[in-house]
Length: 324
Image (cartoon, rainbow, N blue to C red; front, side):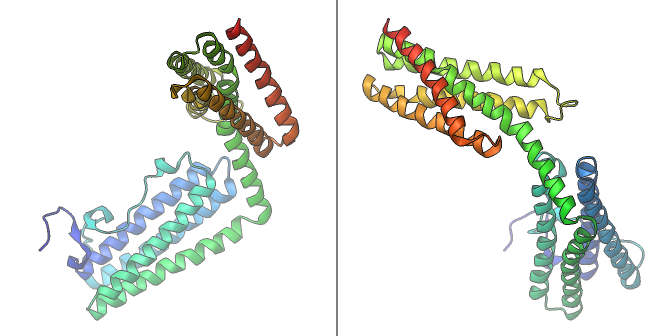
């Protein structure tokens, strides 16, 4: 016994409805590929051409399916889409992938073709009607052919030099939009909050008060850094990307950097909390050096020396002020 649902089960669809579903799916996929092409055309023109070609392939299959429907069932195609069928594969909205980078879009396109092929194969296996089984098998073969067509189009429009160039552009954009603001925030949160947190710690030797000061300093610095980053550059001329993304990256990482050595002061014992906080600071500073080395091509030991020296000076200032 099935529970009531507004969605149809695939096993309840007749052959005409299966064909109509395939037609609407091809139409939707063509729109998605054209949207990808439009999103990527300015920064990644070669990959944009690949998606234009894939959309054209979907149009070809849609026309063949319509011709089959016209031959078997006439001119009127029932309105049935993938969201009307329970268990049918879903497509992610294009806007969800807009900010996720070129590699993620390529992966999503490959998954689209695999999902469609797998669904049709499974549906064909469950069908007891010979004609329906053949129809679903043909659709599965068409989807498999889409994958080979995508590979062919990629070879045609996206040679090794073009792919390398686009990959470099994507990497540079990722660094400008996420890594640089996040690194600046992490450095600010980790280093600038050292002095007030440890000054309060040594002045009061009260772990709860120190934690509250560290929490306030971290959150306040995060809000300040986030708004400053977002307001300083709209990204249009500099090419640094969305100010909202950069603001979030900077603000969140600033807060995280400060909270790292504020949270140990939730430990009631002063010296246990302080030693734990110092150990956390050590790992924070080395994490900053590692990020600089990995993404900014800064020699690791030079980055470590700069960060550790700066952090040590700020830490010493906080201890001296608090002890005085």
